[in-house]
Image (cartoon, rainbow, N blue to C red):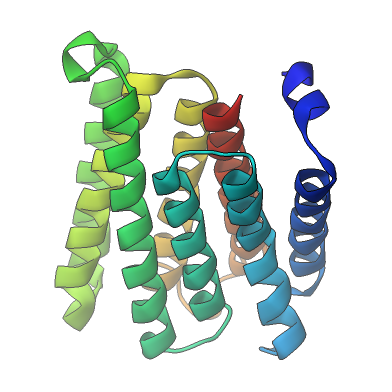
Length: 215
């Protein structure tokens, strides 16, 4: 892996630094009210990974998935159902792009470890049931989104390694975000922990997927 970092040129190193700074900046302001600074920090963190992947000659579907994720981040930096649906749509497309990429690069489901496949299926069934039951008018888009997450996760299992770890962290962040949106009360004391957890797991997942596909 050290060889990968040695191969980075100045543009790619700059994008990596900007990405990490964006991650850190958003982590410090995520509990504050919506603002342009907050939105930019959140969007830049993964947006810079998209530029890094593109400049490093990574798969176009990786660049697309990261760019869509950054768009979703911009939506989710704001409150309300419209922003949530915008983020949901962006991440749905990102998960589809990841799934196509993973299955195209992996060894196929037949060669994937059964425990990993089973874990993804159980995760999707439990998460899907809990979220859809409590999503009200958003039940259908949430169900479609959970299905996309599951397919992406299955694709991650076919690749293993850093990509699988990244996909698992991504899925965990989505599960916490969904719980925060549909299962927790507005006054729950857990909310002070869920937002940082979602951001850390999500960013780590995206970074590991990117690294796993570029090394």
